[in-house]
Length: 98
Image 1: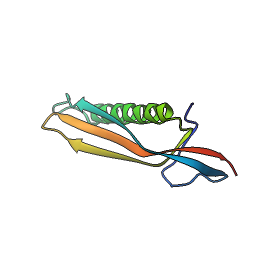
Image 2 (image 1 turned 180 degrees about the vertical axis):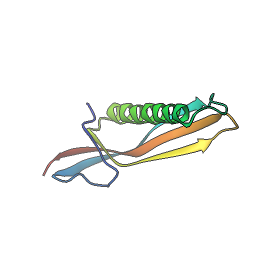
Image 3 (image 1 turned 60 degrees about the vertical axis):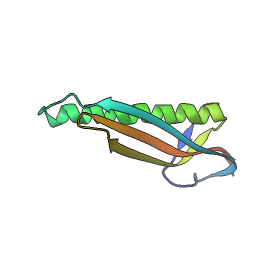
C-alpha cells in the first residue's frame, strides 16, 4: 500500500481513521564532514538526512499496511562531534473518505 498522505496533525480533513497501526519511524545517522565550511553545505546535509528519515518512515508505514501517517514529527540528536541522528516518526493509519 502506498502512503498517500502525511500530516503533523492527528487527523486529515475529509477523511476518517479506520485503523491505527502504531508508531512508525525512520532513522538515519549522518556525518557532518563540513568542518568550518559554509552554512549552505551543512543545510544540504541536514535536508538530505531529513528526507532520508522521512522516506524510511513512509516505507515502515507501508510495510504495516497504512495509507497515511498522522502526528508526523522530526527529532535530531548529536552523536559525538561529527554525527547527527535524524528521526522522523508518526502514527501509521488507514484512512478513508468521510
